[in-house]
Image: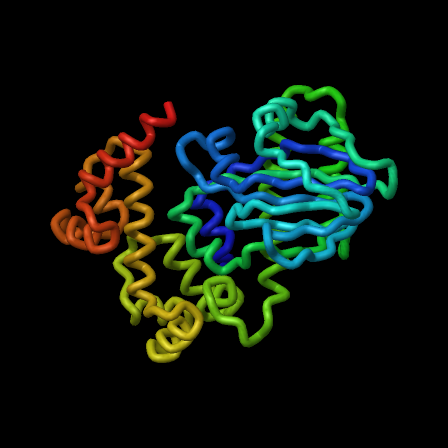
Length: 323
């Protein structure tokens, strides 16, 4: 079973490419944090992941105030927590894109050119919005910035070539935006897969747990069927190990028991339903595996500090601000 796929189905990734650029050295720009980008892409308040695919040339990337990392042709650099960052090649003052953000996003993938006339670097910049609560486990396991090569096998080359062809088309054409959105999602998922594969064997955390056969299978089951009345015994039986082994391995990677993890995940799902639907609290409670509305209310308040009804009211007031 593939727990990453199960989680990605739930957190509803929504991707887009919005910047297609050719820079000649020296050049440098500052990308604003995702909180500045989010109102343009996800008015409901979704989290925005920022990434850049280098299709030709080279540059350096860094979190503001951080150490630069070199990235080259065929690399993707991701800022999963949406930090403001700087990309560039050569010594020059970074151009702040924040004042020009509306203009940049409005022009879509229209090719932008800038720089001093030296070495050429081609970049496709993308954004990925997702539910901030449901994606928290995935994002918590990722560093603030990381680089992954995607051109080192035929699958990665095909994906990169498809993206390069798609963004190079001068005319949009019917369905182009939808195609690019799916390509953006595929690029992000492929990058995360490769990042997980290269984690050190001694690594712990959610992403390392995904890679572990027993813990990964347990996570996939919990995410695929969260309303199932799981117990540690039934979960261990499905995974094919003893209860003690599963509990020990799960706690080693995720620092909590399987049933505690399941409770948190159920309540995150319930929170999303409260924000995005008008269904009754009792129905939502049943959907995430609670037989009693009262028990659900108590558990929800423990995690979110307010009961479900008040949580929904607060979410609606926040959403009204963005309308």
